[in-house]
Image (cartoon, rainbow, N blue to C red; front, side):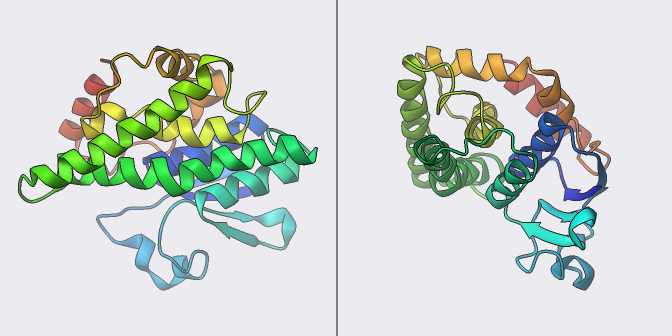
Length: 220
């Protein structure tokens, strides 16, 4: 059994989608950001960085894993799924995973912050991060032009990048003309395990208006 500590964010979805894809039993512990549960001492023992997601593998002496990319790799290695064992195939998947961890996620996260949450309109910041996010999505689009998935078969690289790329509208990022990217987003969104994963955790702590706005934007 896996204990999953998470919230309804792109990084959180990476862990729950992966758990659904590899069909491991898990128990969800929704972290309430408003109550700053992620900064409490009990959680910092699991993740010293005080962020979600994090997991605890009960079957491995309560082994804790934090950082969403590390969680994907750990679960892939534990189950032998969604990460090739062959050196070159594994490297290709890891390259695209690092692309998301070091580029797409941070840039889209900043685009979201400046476009959606910043206390004042700061157009240089909005432009900077929207433009860089668009550039990174163009990189994905180019790769997907001649490939069904990012690195051979469907893998943790697709899960990691998809969980961020799908939310482009929330950061005000234009994906017009990125037809291969949009095909891939729709294709992965149709997977039953993915649909289950992005419904976790229930949005009990979210502002209802923001949730409905996000849903409507993501449908555009």
